[in-house]
Image (cartoon, rainbow, N blue to C red; front, top):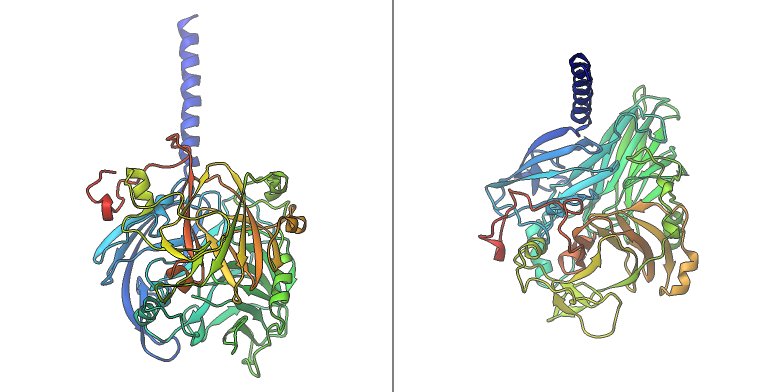
Length: 541
């Protein structure tokens, strides 16, 4: 070949290589950097001054707005007088349970110290939250909204809203959270809440223009109480639940249980004036309410009269509503492919796990348990014990996968599972109070709700076509809820009651999703800045 031809080929090759290199650079996911400082402060959300937890001086904490696949580098500085951790409720932490921010995966951040979280909302979109995961810090604040927006060119199944509001609603206690924690430690239950807050306040105003449509991202960030949400004179079009785009049905009001999030579109199509926004408790006597104001920009008429009434029917009404939440099969989520391209209902589960919650007394004190096991935290995070092969921290036979008779006991309970298994989990609630179950690292298909005892025959009632995926599922009193999970995310994952006193007193366990072959395609290595505590002190990451 002539020299000139060789030079031409080399020039073309270098040009192609340069284009390829540019495409790699532009395809990189963006990095977003945050520094958050956690301090105490004094606020009076219910009219009584009390100590709260602030992040960057804010109560609730800053809203974290990111885009699918952003690399989030968040330096958290703990200025409290005790250890602290944040968990990212609903963020799957793909291959990365090291960043999950719970005591089974992370050492708490000591006082006057810091830890830098590094994670991605990988292939996720939607409405999520963050909150403190240890002790009873959540009763003092430290929580906030976490919204994951779509990447450019990834369509969403509705017109871009004219505005976007985050509503963090939850029950609240005037009692100092250390006093509440001491009460739980002594074997008592939480008292009845003193009130409901919306965005950390008893009064809020949300402004909009007549004729425009706004997204309201609603999360129940409370400790223990289900809520009903409604806007006077306006319909709520449900479009997203915890990262799932839904069939866009319209509701007068929506039940949102502890730990859950929904997103609705609201069109301001009424006479220009002010309207009540209401969050009120469900399944409680008395009913507590908080109100905010939806203010039309040209309104001259303030809100007046009684708050719009919520549903008067209880469990049956709420369960019936829950069954109407369905997956939008043709909509994309964070990826271009439709949600419905994964035919979950055609896959046969390799295992069924039935989890029964209970409220036993152990050593004369109130505890909460799963399949008779009330969880106790180890001094060493389970993930570190697993990584460093530290014996005696947990065992894989400490909890059974089916309920059984016998006394309840304390243990650091872990259920083993294999990576890429597809499993069925049934939450059986034989108590008279509603439950709310959350699983870190995953979302799951909520395929069935029913009353009484679950049996295999109940599978005939499952929705195996368009059940939505979510990370937190309610279980009604004396009822069951069934979910299907594709175990595609290796790690040590917390499965817990989202009702925080029950979690604190033992209604949780860890799911160890494992493949013995060390492979970065399955799980990332321990981060170089991992905090070490307990028996992991002195180990080298």
